[in-house]
Image (cartoon, rainbow, N blue to C red):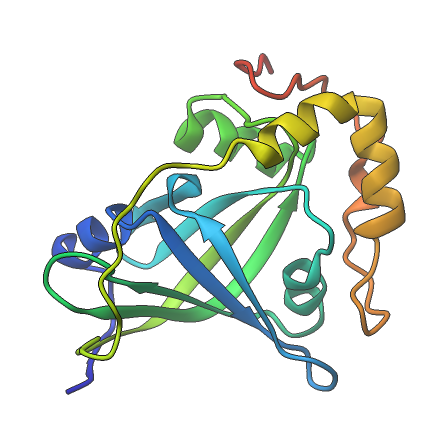
Length: 199
């Protein structure tokens, strides 16, 4: 049976942190609903009502466009091993573009100042509802390891190549909504992906 909570207690935070993958769901008032898988290692539980994940460059940027348009975002975690459970965080999000002051501050405080290659933004979710459900229908899977493909692709692109790619592929959603991402591409901070960032 589903249970509702008004905050993320330590048990639920530990469950979220322990998952290798989680999913985001977002939508504007009109247009397509987006669902995306995210690397579990990118997640940080900041406190009882706030989580963040460090997002990497991809072929689209639907979440940023939808958050800009509506603010709504849901994160879902499910147990693929051990005791079954599904966990959802509902709330209102904001996107911190790479090189923005808020991004740099949170990168330092929550991620040790280290960016993965291809980092493009941090998404921060203010959680107003937490839900657990049984997860009995989720199959069991064995974790094999992380793919290195995205990391190698980002490293081969380099800073200039990633910037050009984001300008071409990440500036708006598939429904034509602006993401706001490219406005910060020429910001003042120098950040070298894959290393410690010096502010």
